[in-house]
Length: 451
Image 1 (cartoon, rainbow, N blue to C red):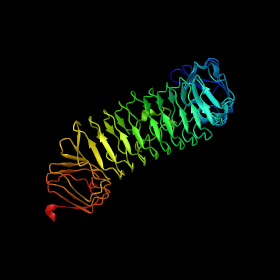
Image 2 (cartoon, helix red, strand yellow):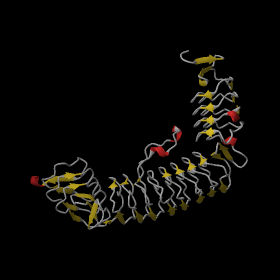
Image 3 (cartoon, rainbow, N blue to C red):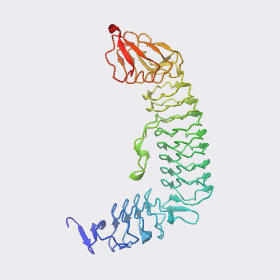
Image 4 (tube, one colour):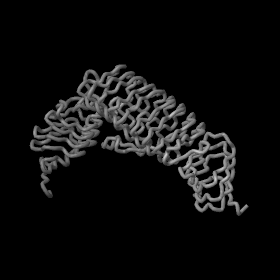
């Protein structure tokens, strides 16, 4: 073999002390030879015939996904001496029932023992290396034991018996989908040490009505409260937050009012780094809006310093009537207010650096660009003010009551889908228009000199 690779017992390929490949038959029992110090990534994954493994006393590390989905593996001997266990090392070893878990000093990956339910203790907890990997109990009220630093991905997912969860001190991280689909969960008391809440941590908790997130939290992932349809009240962290992930309150139909904290710079921007690096839990790009489908939402207080509202942030917030733009100004996504059928005004103070409002319609500060016409206005006719040169993408989108629009000479550019889903049948364009995407109107239109 090239380099430092050697073959031991005709089945173990070892390089620099690390087992990098197992080339044996589909044996049910494997004894790894003494002298091996590490097991490489994925060496035994999907070995469904494997039932028992004995590790050497020389072993110090097990790589990522090393025994992943060894679904019939029952016994692992010698694990107590290992100093490092990688992400997903024993992921979905669902029949694993006998091993000595590593000491508290062992470095254990976030998903190392996820779905190894038979290893849970008498109280239903599977804990290793300060991570709570699984809960298999049926209690209605659960207090997380002391000594836990993080809740592993999917640890409580679909635990329908749980109604209340109380966190102990020292917990800093809630993993992806940790409490997802706990449909009877109504109360969560979080640790004041908490820093991370990862993707979909409480998604589909359809009985959750309120939650207080401590100020210690500085990262909240994508779709964390998606489909929490009874959620009415939430206290967001103040001071440390900068970015929330996409779709955080997607389809939270009972949420009526919310104050976004000072210090955040954007909402509804997909953040893939919120997910754990273990690929089993990485989501495709979230396209759901931050408040999309919050059909009871009436009031949102946007803080100064917010720079960006994402593509679908307020889509289908059908009771939202007014939006106050902060003085610092911000970038507004194309479809941010689609389906806001009662939105009748944008409120802008004279101090705002980027925008102004004329009769509730949002314009650039210099008045040369019409940014957004409130789709809830009931008037049937609108005249674009003289001096406007551009009409932004989706500017009139969703204004279903609107039947006619006068566009003055001087307008030269009309953005994508500018008049989509309105009550307009046709538009007379001024001769000054030089740029109109094919989908800008999606209705019949004429140039005035052709009439």
